[in-house]
Length: 206
Length: 206
DNA sequence: GTAAATTTATTAACAGTGTTAAGTTTGCTT
DNA sequence: AAGCAAACTTAACACTGTTAATAAATTTAC
Image (cartoon, rainbow over all chains, first blue to last red; front, side, top):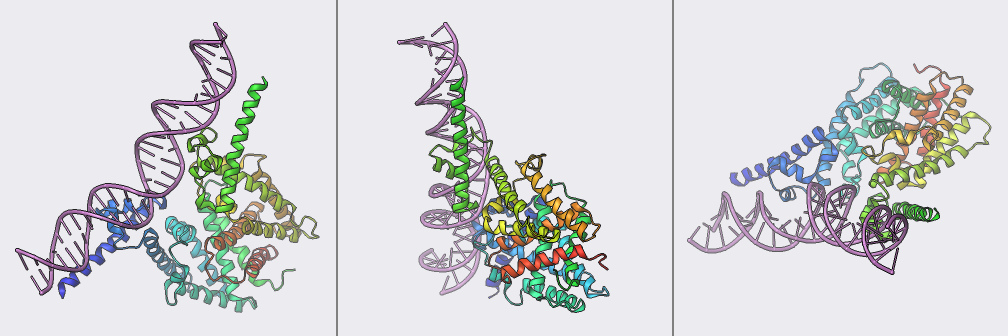
């Protein structure tokens, strides 16, 4: 049955070509230019063909999101792993999150700022053992360590989500409103991290 | 020349009707349903008529944004103005920011999460004496007071922008990904504010 | 009061978007 | 060679924002 397999391989390769084309358009021309017809044009097939390989546009975006999370996992999990204190390791991970957003703005936009909720279920992204799950686990670990070291008895989950939100705020606001008179970016990011993380060392906020 | 004035008034009233219709659609059916044809249908005119009163769709959205900022200014400037400490007054303003986002999600989305940069210039929103300017001034004041009281010598502008980003992160992440397994909202918000604001009391983050 | 001019609103269209039903081509199997 | 299933395309639907050309209404001028 090598013929069937060859066809299957071809089908797989075309599927991959579609994802490649989508990624290339996204990175070269931005989210706004990423359309089904544009992808079709690039792979030199009719737009309808894509629907034999993916349910819809969001299905394609979903795969790009997973790819993005994969890259982000790589960046976050390795960031400052050799640093001496739990605090610095957590800080390095958060800094890596922010840097990742700025280094891959369009990837960041589709995974965290676009509205894919209609077709892409959050559940499928969060399934156990998936990238997102690993990503969260790694961050939990760093947050947990930092909390223990700082003798802070806050909830790991809440702190993680709050810190994530803070970082997302920095990235999304700067990406979304590039013309706003922001202070120097490096300074703003560091100030943001300073403020967020100082909370771990304060026992009680009156 | 009262005739000209009457015409002008009618023109003004239709202009207002368009804005009203846009707002009603936005609030009742959400950002996704807000289209030019939908507005035209509601005011019982052809879609083209709208273009005699507004340059384009973003021009309409711009006015809704200003309206939103107006409401937000009202909410933020009055929030906890009678509280005893500068810290609590700043915190109340930030809390009001977050609450405003959740109470008017679609308004928040178009002003802070949508991509209007192509037509709406940030400069025109930020013009001196405008709502945004007043909003920022009020926040500067609260941040400044809190910094002085905490004997923190950080830059007002940087701290404001960082705190804003943190709050925006909380609102936009929760609004954008409602299906994510967030911790209880109230707890998450308070944790987020705790962490952000604790930074004001820490002299040096090692 | 009629004619010209101006304002106001409309129709029809363009160039896009995601998506689908129906039909055609292709290539393998029997 | 006939049948069949997979792969692919054409044409269309229902939308989107936007514009050029045109018709209708109203005001101004004679």
